[in-house]
Amino acid sequence: MPKRLQFLNLQVQQVTQGAICSIALQVFKHLHNLDLPFHLSKQTGTLARIMDRGSRGINFMLGALVFNVVPTMFEVAMVAGILTAKCGPEMGLLTLATLAGYTGFTFSITSWRTRFRKDMNKAEAEAGGRVVDSLINYETVKYFGNEQHEAQRYDMCMQRYQAGAIKTSQTLAFLNLGQSWIFTAAMTIAMLTTANAVNAGQASVGDLVMVNGLLFQLSMPLNFLGTVYRETKQSLVDMGSLFALLKMQPSVTDTPHAKPLPPSPNGYEVDFQDVHFGFRPTAPVLQGISLHIPAGSSCAIVGGSGGGKSTIMRLLYRFYEPNQGTILLNGQSVKDATLASLRSAIGIVPQDMVLFNDTIYYNIAYGDLNASKEKVEAAARAAHIHDTIKSMPDGYNTIVGERGLKLSGGEKQRVAIARAFLKAPPLLLFDEATSSLDAATERHVLEALRALAKGRTSIFVAHRLSTAAQCDQIVVLDKGRVLESGSHSDLLQRGGRYAELWWKQASGTH
Image 1 (cartoon, rainbow, N blue to C red):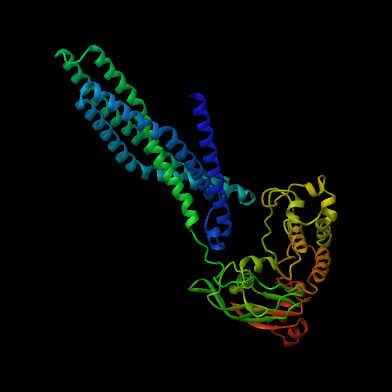
Image 2 (cartoon, helix red, strand yellow; image 1 turned 135 degrees about the vertical axis):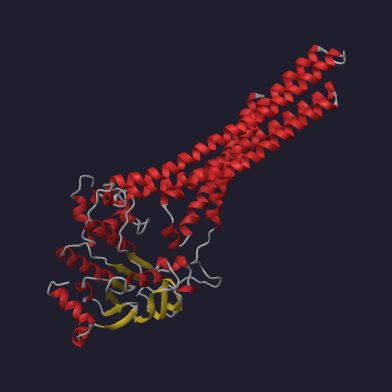
């Protein structure tokens, strides 16, 4: 029998762990499929806590049902049957009535307690998110000397967690007290009834001992059953939060008639036709943007901060959908292309370069996970970071730290550029790709970028007009509208906004 139980336990554990891994993987993949607005509104630490508690909830549910609930129900049925056969139907009914009262009280009180547990979990998740957010922004905290402020914010979360935990413990004590009263009352009635039967000669002393032993034996699984139900309710809450993530649907998805974007080795022709977009209806970012970028050419988008330059990049990459208007690649709307084919055709160097806490080699190779070591190093050379990496003690095996904080801003930027070199897609997007580089390195990187962009379509968002001046076309944005466009020389001759910005930068004024 022990071997059979051990085998059953092994089988249950295999099923349980398989289910946990499958669901955790499904949630992880689903989180990556959700759109950018979802991730901008969520805290990473909170999501991690939800996944962790949900996995533990699944583990408890499967284990409890097999090894606790079913055996307890079987034991209750056996005790009720034996007492009915030996002591009459009254004792069996008393056993069932005790079970019903015990279960009803446990379920009702546990349902009442659930809201306190939810508040406690919410505070715990918020505290976890606060820890992750604060530690990720460690440098910012130090820059402004706000360690005490961060400690106070964390303490506020923990105070709410403490209040919820105390309330949970108090209600648990009330639950346990009520359970004890119910069972003690049932035990007292059963013993008095059996004792009267012994006095009347209808039962023996052995029957009295049997009733006491069976009921006392029943008390242990019943007490544990209350714990199982309480934890089951909590597990359901945790699993509900986990499955709620799975129910969330991204706002940007493949349309039913979406087709793969046809390959275009020589770059894509890009068209924005009267594109309007705003994160809120009352705050438009783009107001009727129309621009045409021929295939294989380069275009720079310049203008003041908040003018919508980076938004154009994100709309093209379909992180967002325009409120109005159409975006075309080679005459095909990006909405009619599958997201996988669209994004595989675009390489981007973002303004905020966030690296994985892994080696430099891994971060560069992320642009093409199947690339050989020679290609990875060639991409690093093209981004003018190969020599810098080789000068490090661990070379390409250097760990960059959380978000790449062990590297300088210029080094992170060149790693991001190397990734774009390695991917080498037909459409390249550079959002302030050289903003963290010194003048000499910028010149070398721009030469490399021009070589990379040759035969490809490239779009640069730039505050440094030295970058924009190298492009075939320059588009000047102002408050979400195209103010002027043309080549560098044309715009200087017009003496408009671009010429004003150019001479300001050239003279070193702001």
